[in-house]
Amino acid sequence: MKQLYAAGLMLAMTGAHAATQTVDCGRLLDVKSGAWRERVSIVVENGVVKSVGPMTQAPGNIDLSRHACLPGLIDMHVHLTGETQPVVDSYRDRLTADTSDLAYRSIKYAQRTLLAGFTTVRDLGAQDGLNVSLKRAIAAGDVPGPRMYTAGKSIATTGGHADPTNNLSHFLGEKIGTPGPEQGVIDSPEQGRQAVRARYKEGADLIKITATGGVLSQAANGHNSQYTEDELKAIVDTAKDYGFRVAAHAHGAEGMKRALRAGVDSIEHGTLMDDETIALFKKTGHWYVPTISAGRYVADKAKIDGYYSALVQPKAAAIGPQLQATFARAHKAGVKIAFGTDAGVFPHGENAKEFGYMVEAGMSPVEAIRAATVHAANLLDQSKRLGSVEAGFAADIIAVEGDPLRDVKLLEQVKFVMKEGVVYKKP
Image (tube, rainbow, N blue to C red; front, side):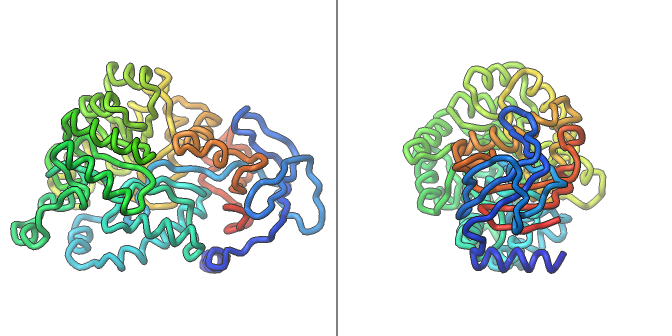
């Protein structure tokens, strides 16, 4: 495994890939039709798919003739600059870890994600511009990792989920000061507009707001509404001026309704959505990103005394177990769903477990795969470049042994990963 990481690192650092190469696949999933294409060759030129046709098996081709190939997977909700840990370690990090320490750690999280078959991610919030810097390092070939679309710093209200000063001592609070729009904390429509512009300056690709309380923030309520409708409208309208989509973290129904009415593009988690919320999803055509994996993980960890703080533990125990059932209701009602996990809340690299949870809740394997390919690409506004293996698309290709349409959990055992024509993992 160490050799594999090293090889991937060298490839990424040099940007090395053959100008033209051919991948022979025993079968290739056409994600749009849901059908397998048998014995195909994918010609890749300068990181882009040039053609897909009958298998040639010429000398020098990449031999995946015993494998099933799919497009690189897309996770629409990750946090690559951090990872779950017990509360005592989390508090220690807040006191002792520098931004540079967190930056170096994020390299292994990016590597794990890529080697798990996720060639594109949407990173929805980090402090100090870390996710923006990681995105740039990956794009430059300095660090191996998935293609990133980043929100920069999540935007919160004072005391809300993503206010970085929640529950600090008076001493620390006085030293840090009161965060404002530049730090992603707002309390008026005008400050909301300022915060969006600060994310633009920061180098973000989209806006993330925390429309309700959250599970892991050091605050008592995990689902209350935390914005007025005029604040939400100011943020969304300003975001559209800058060409940003807006993702809204939300657990409580009222916060979701306000966010959907304001015009956000996606609701993340959506735990306590009610029938009225589902009707609003259907009316607006906005997307739901479920993050079942995070719900399952925090529910399990809430049973361990001391893993979470006294504020977080009851929220994790109450909200976490409900996500999968909410997903089942939303899917049955026909809400548009894009794949997302909230990786970082659980260990990076385990993203594909989400497929199994989605299928357990009633979604077919092919629809779960579409959620992580064509549907996710649509939400990213990249439907002509990502999410499918066809001419003109980025050469993001993964492979597994067996048939993931029969056993979707095979996607937890990806054997081959190519991103933009660079091979990072081979059988």
